[in-house]
Length: 224
Image (cartoon, rainbow, N blue to C red; front, side, top):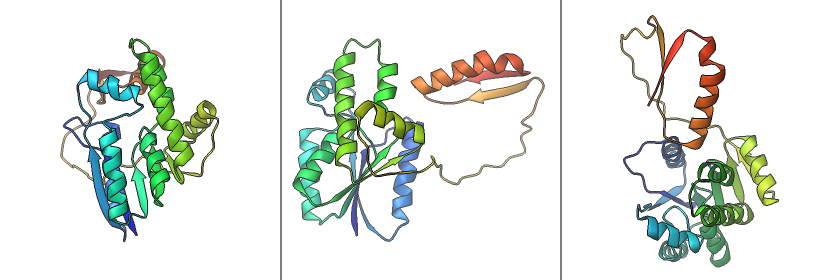
């Protein structure tokens, strides 16, 4: 089987999403399939991002990328396309319309839920939210199977889009790497360290932890 993996092009910023995408790709490489790889760079120019959002393209996707991917699928007899982002729904629609390839979409979140909470102060809020809604809706509609991390994400998508889909669940995974040393981890006072991106769910979770847990234990917390 020929499979095309489509995802965001990695940058220097390490996030939970980037680690998850990396491990999805590594897992596919370990199978017997013939694996092709197409990465899309996400630009930083806000004007271009807004323009693409008006056309319902997200995360670097464009008309150019869409047509190039469809041509690649036809030329290389791709049987299945793995979209490692639910915001590539417009691409899923075009693939389904123009090819016979099956589509598998990986949902890192219910993105509509995340975006609606995290970009409320953005003056382009409605425009950005619309493009998220359209793409995630298309992902549910045109994918042959959707992969969710949690049942909560699946139920949120059902609630927002009024659509059901063939789906499976897989817990988030990390590459099996261990670093051992002789450091003494427990000191007085005991210290906790949180390292993560400035991301709405992280902020929400940390706020809850500080308000309801940290005040009741003998630990200090450092947040990076």
